[in-house]
Length: 80
Image 1 (cartoon, rainbow, N blue to C red):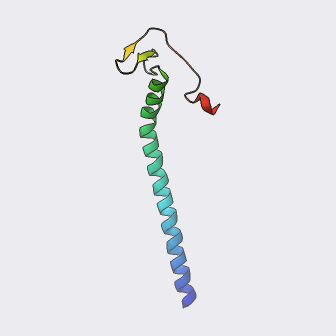
Image 2: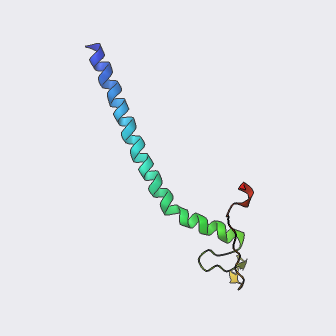
Image 3: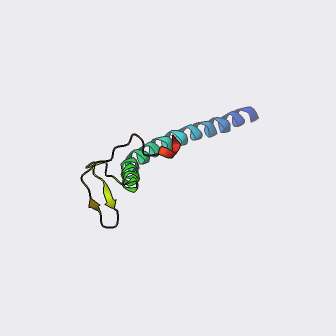
């Protein structure tokens, strides 16, 4: 009788863990996909150019835009 109870408890814990992990992973992917575009736009504006219109931002406080686009391969040159 004790073994059935122990197996039942361990099975319940295992099923609960797996369901929670799957739900959390799906929720994390959904949140990441919704926030990633804003993150990359923010990083590109900090670097001085707009990824939407490919123009330089000379001063972020006034948001004046110059005509020469600045293209780089990575938003994180310090990681290279």
